[in-house]
Length: 300
Image 1: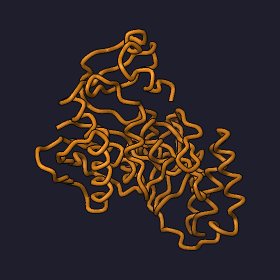
Image 2: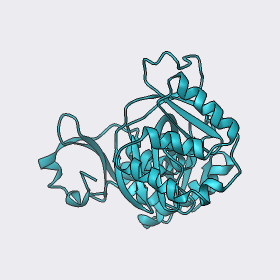
Image 3: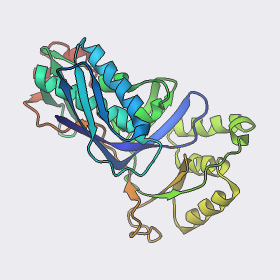
Image 4: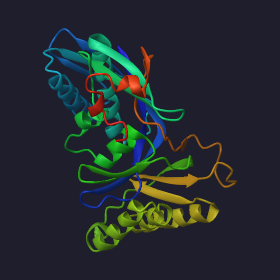
């Protein structure tokens, strides 16, 4: 069995059409997987994740033309029920299964570009796999591409359709998760669609806080709007609303955050990782000699 993990993505602002933006939380999702002799894909996850995980697992096996099965288990099932756990589960399931394929039919290495930039990479049949393969195999219907990217890369991601437009690290805020009633009114999705796109454009430019707050206020019920304003008055820098949850961002030294809150998380700037020791650490000049290395996409 080969393990992998990543965080759980959350909408940065409410998506509009094919426009999305998300950030990664340190609510870790961990899977372990293995290729099996039979042809059956066995998925041991909560029911709402099973069909999605099975589909991305099938994508992974088909990519390598493997006529075999797989066993995929969720290791840490202490989930909060956040909507982004679906995207995270697919990314991490693919990573763990791909890692098992590489471990048995190749190797797992680390590329050290400089003191700060390191990349995990896989070789299968003596060829380096492209960096974004996990992301491509996880991108199936019904999932948010922005959230897949935030989970894969870490930090934040801004996307249009299946094109990643911007990504990077965020300040490592503390994040308080509050369960809130879902707003069933659709006015924000229709009447204010132009205004929502303006907010997305601001996020694309790198201006997060005000668009996040405005998006949360406009997409919430009147009761939750009052709660949001109350949290902002206490020191919340920004907040976002998604699927019955509100995420409030606080700085580490903020006196207003409740340190006893069990749902207090952090921004996670790390992306998905297979939890296996690297067989070798490559310097860039040696890495570029490997077959497929120039197609890897170091800066992508």
